[in-house]
Amino acid sequence: MVFDIEKILTVGLRDWADTKRLPPAALDDYELVGVHVEVLTTNDDLIGVFAGRVPENTKIVVGYRASVSEKYAVASGTALVSKVFPEV
Image (tube, rainbow, N blue to C red):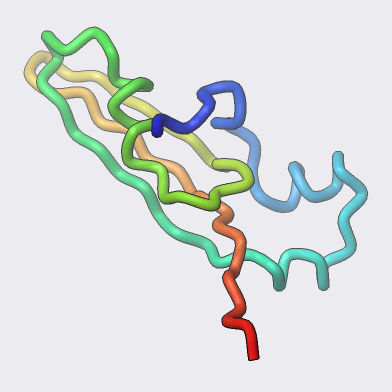
């Protein structure tokens, strides 16, 4: 399943948390996972490829950045992945 691109944001983690009025302790429920992709510039769908690499159980991606050169396009961001606690 491809991650919803509307949940890929350029804002930083703290700014996102502030807009949601989340206390700092609420972020303990998430693991921060870096996501990085590199594609040939001829590939029109950089954001689509990026969305396909976002881990399962991701709430949101923050700090998304992309750049394009003559040959390559790169994108990176930080996924907030919900921690899964095993049942006891």
